[in-house]
Length: 46
Image (cartoon, rainbow, N blue to C red; front, side):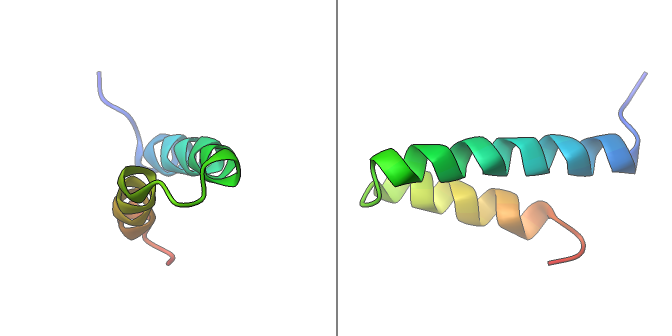
């Protein structure tokens, strides 16, 4: 049983929230910035 599109979008938004928190603690972390960009590109409305 797979995820619905709405569930997937919710998961991506949840992950982006945690990435934002991590970037507040380590704003220069290039790996986190790259990961955030990848997750952001997965959202349909952005």
